[in-house]
Image 1 (cartoon, rainbow, N blue to C red):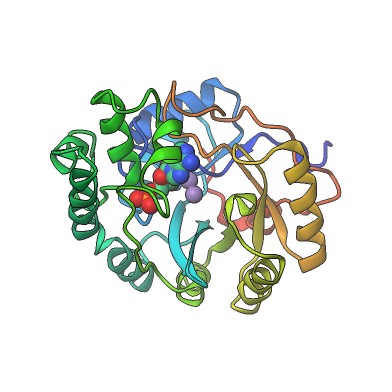
Image 2: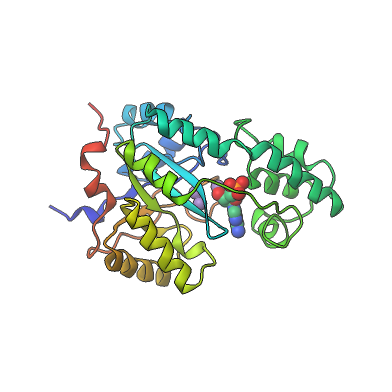
Length: 289
Ligand code: AMP
Ligand code: MN
Ligand code: MN
Ligand code: MN
């Protein structure tokens, strides 16, 4: 038998229930067609698409783990914590996610005001045209509108010129605490995983604090192979997984065809020296009958 690190698991992607453009059903079909063998939909701060994703995956013969990606503020920087394999009916998790989503509309109105001051009017209404879930208006929806309006050529250019710290359209926001996010996930029977660690602009001390505190709160894993990591970054965070005693996860972070560089399932294998997070979650995997 092959070691399970060879499995084509894709445990990070987004549907139109958050800031992806495909429905949960279309994503399940795309994952299956791309050879994914274990799948999780991880919408931002939202589990409203879980039932649809699970039903579509199991109907296609594709094993499924529940998922979400929680926005967290840690030492003033936004960090994403992926939750996998939790009970999607857990009341505390649902309340925590609702609270985390809560301020997004007001934040979006402030982002729109800031862009208007920079000479770009009407971006709130413009972004709303791309929103599939009125509770989940995100920077990605603004980015799509700025491309449509001809302000930028693509969404990467938007995030270089707008919507990020120090640029027009950026509005600081207080998300969930690291402790709460990890506990909501683990108390609901799931595994908390640090998403795309190479993306954060932490000092070495801050990164050490993130990993140490995450682990102390009960966090179990870290993304090593992701659409956001170069090969060198995957090596670096594979070493961090071993150093901190964390399992390793793998996920494309796919949002949209034509927008995302990494398609569902189109990722390097997890290094065989690491413990795959799906080994830890064996009894949480939902399998086709
Ligand atoms: P929000 O949760 O509203 O702050 O939006 C965060 C989302 O914006 C992320 O999940 C990505 O989908 C997108 N995003 C952030 N930074 C970038 C970037 N540099 N390039 C492309 N998309 C980005
Ligand atoms: Mn996103
Ligand atoms: Mn993320
Ligand atoms: Mn993501």
